[in-house]
Amino acid sequence: MVAQKTQIAPPKLGEPFLLTPGPLTTSYAVKEAMLRDWGSWDDDFRAMTKSMRSQLLEMLGEGADDFDCVPMQGSGSFAVEAMLASFIPKDGKTLVLANGAYGKRSAQTLAYLNREHIVLDKGDYLPPRGEEVAKILAEDPAITHVVAIHCETSSGILNPIEEISEATYGAGRKLLIDSMSAFGAIELKVADIRYEAMVSSANKCIEGVPGFGFIIARKSELEAAKGNSHSLSLDVHAQWAHMNKTGQWRFTPPTHVVAAFLEALKGHKVEGGVAGRGARYARNRDVMVEGMRELGFETLLKDRWLSPIIVTFFCPADENFVFDQFYALMKEKGFIIYPGKLTVVDSFRVGCIGQMDEHIMRQVVTAAKETLAEMGVASAAPPALALQERAKLAA
Ligand SMILES: *Cc1c(COP(=O)(O)O)cnc(C)c1O
Image 1 (cartoon, helix red, strand yellow):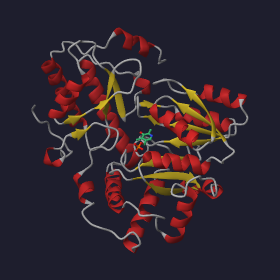
Image 2: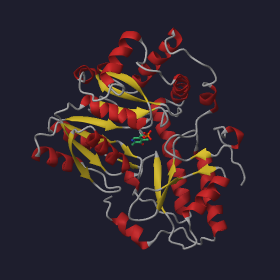
Image 3: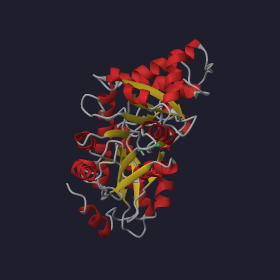
Image 4: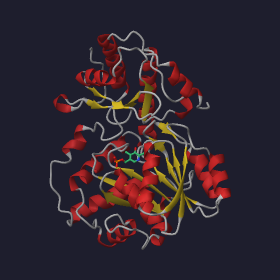
């Protein structure tokens, strides 16, 4: 393969690019930032935590003063659990909007927490719409909270969060958002979209390494969260109160991850913040999808629903196509792709996030083309069943 010109340095030591939704390919500067140790109680590290929290809040735009940012140790799911347990009172009732694995995980978390909830399950990839939410809320006045997934990473669908927010507040209820794979690349300005709290993590669109999540919540909700959590370590109110009082995390912080994250935030700013990052990812998606379609691949989603985060493709119908072999041959060429999560037809996913640009995405398409040839796959066209499935999705 002929290397194309790129602004983005390839990963060192022959590492493959991670075309996955996090952990993802990070910059060398981000990795390098982890080459020193920090004392968690030391002023230097406290200043790092403070700077990180305020930089994240800046991304909310006008009105951010009403919110605060609370980092939480663990992977993203720990932060989701912390958010759900801390902001939904024990006697609250939640409507979970699910259209994939992460919506289901929120519902499962509420089941573990013994918090009353109902689920609007739209299957693998249909979006929950504002009218549906409004109807359910009108019929069930006991519902206090709605939980929505911003980008459902299992299909890559960008859910209509504005619509969902309007329906929720139109009915006088509160919205909590899992914006794990969207925040930092897709605007979530509090002046445009009303919500009480959202959650994301270090290793998604900010392009840090895994190790913590963060909850951004309205200060009034943070105050009111006292005593809601079932868990000592996941209590957002307690973490917030302690951090504001002492500048420290309650329990051992992932110091190196925070240092790397600050470096990642620098890169995010240089790129032009949320708008700049979102534009690069959208370009990554457009170049990659166009190239893959030229090879005959079809996307699960119609263009209106394609997120700039990750794209699901149907596996080709050609009997020579075997996903595991496709995966291994792509990896040999330097690209790690991701298996699909659809229940009805076979699929795979290609991520657009991380330290990659359109030149890399063109190389991904070239690698896919060569791999199909090596496997003896004549056409990447999906089976008829896949297209029937897709026809269910409105434009
Ligand atoms: C990545 C992700 C999570 C968290 O997953 P972890 O594996 O716990 O980091 C939650 N929700 C969404 C939508 C995600 O993309």
